[in-house]
View 1: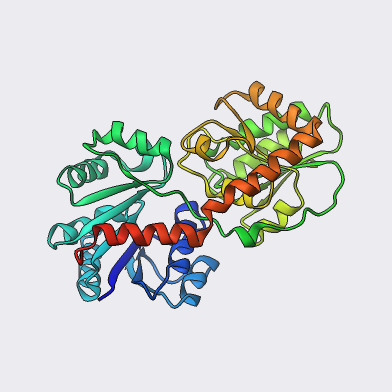
View 2: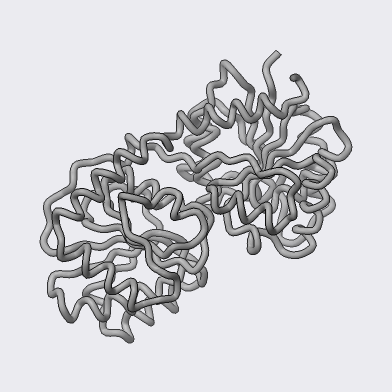
Length: 359
């Protein structure tokens, strides 16, 4: 009898955690394990993340929850889990709280992947619930980087280390020959929100464009600060240099037209977008937050968060040295191979088997 895994997440927005779930579910060997994905919120979005899962012959079930806490959603999720009867429940983001009642009532463990800095992952009441679940051994934390693993031990006073499995990336999708273009093209991608701190990057570009005439920055992504960031770019007089493209389906095409990937986040978990940029053979310049130092080693340069001057200085170094850019880019591509989605999916299968009730 094969293990049955219920992968549960709140919704299918175009975010890092949702992308990770899509890549995981799409690459699991179904000859070894049965998988069902459960989405707590809403209805099908018919986006690329869902379609990738469905094309891999993995079912997605929708609970139909609306905003706010819902006992009805807890009940519907209970019924769905009872019908599927998983041997392991694998949760993401706040889905862990909704799965807790069912897990407590059954001889099943819950694996919970931490996608962000543990301190900011959950609000206080939900964090308290998970602290109890970790302490009694009903929930097993899974960190996406060594840094996050260490943070989990400190934040939740864990008796033993969290499991460690890095995020997956579809390497073949993002590897393309770099397209010829004029000047130096920088690219960043991510949710347009406070923690991503794109304003710091805009400030850095304001300084750099006074020295480099053919410099440009493309910002990919959407979010609550979109209008504010557009206005900030315009106020800085950078509308011809910085281009906000919103959410795009062909991120890899933008990467192939770029020279440097840059991230200016104030805090992170392990950004999938850096792995994608590595697969595109790009050198990485990033703030040193979360688990980024685990994957940006000989393939990029790290700077202190909230330090615009440091970001400017490092970008100058990479902009002016073409040989350095090539070396860092080649190292990116070499290093990213171990994070290919098929390899990470196999690691999760081993983890499911380790904690399954079928052992």
